[in-house]
Image (cartoon, rainbow, N blue to C red):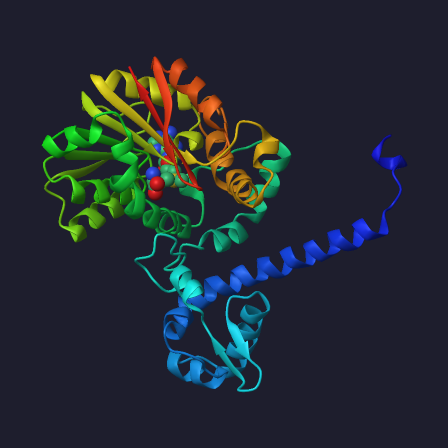
Length: 358
Ligand SMILES: C[S@@+](CC[C@H](N)C(=O)[O-])C[C@H]1O[C@@H](n2cnc3c(N)ncnc32)[C@H](O)[C@@H]1O
């Protein structure tokens, strides 16, 4: 039966409209979360107990009337709790853990949701891209993208990278403890390189990215963290970085963004020591689209269209494997790039951690 011949099921329509209204409200809520973060509303509410809208406005030097709408939107989504008898709002500890605690592994504040205004700003270019297949280079997006990416990924690197991802690779932790050479390709603002340098003071780290503005910021980040003696950053496309042989070459959430992931991995093969390790950290995904038709896959497919696919299509080859490429496709990229051994070293609910060896 074709779609045209299918009859309208009233109950399904109602249920779909219900979930659509939830999504529509949620999309506006996320914009308000972004504003609330910038205004310091979550940090002001964390641990403060129940507050009226006037008290929150006073604490944050904001206008009560806007704060009242903000709080009621947050209460409607379960982000804050409302006590109707007292007319107060409270940020529960779990929500504070996500929005107000910058040490939390799931922290979503300090601009991590900056993808939202970047998406607003890309509207016209995306319309054209959808029609023509044109790409949008990473560096041509609104500049909030670069720090949003850093803030979004850094908590996960701090929680997992040296605690579980590197230890899951064969023999790499010991090499880094003794002193090894590491390349961090597509390093952005350098969050991963800084985390590794803090944990492994005997090793040296070079971050590469083709986006010069990100490399400047990465250098500042390393200086601020006091690790510039062992971390340096250079502007280079992934298919052309040099300086090997490296004991460990990492691509954090970027190989799928590249126009030519096989070319990038083939260059890593040239630059890697004969007993070296390639680590790809990629968004968690199953191999088939239907494996990813869930809330997380939905988030990643959306980000993929705006940023990853768009960037890849702006580069030579334009493979556009996307942010939900999955382990099997990434394994092909590694073998086409000249690596012979490939396995899933570990995973988190958000990440695949893949290991390839020459
Ligand atoms: C999603 S960001 C990840 C940044 C960083 N690895 C992190 O985890 O925070 C993707 C990065 O890949 C970089 N990139 C994309 N294509 C590249 C290429 N062909 N060569 C080098 N870097 C590239 C972008 O500039 C961007 O910094």
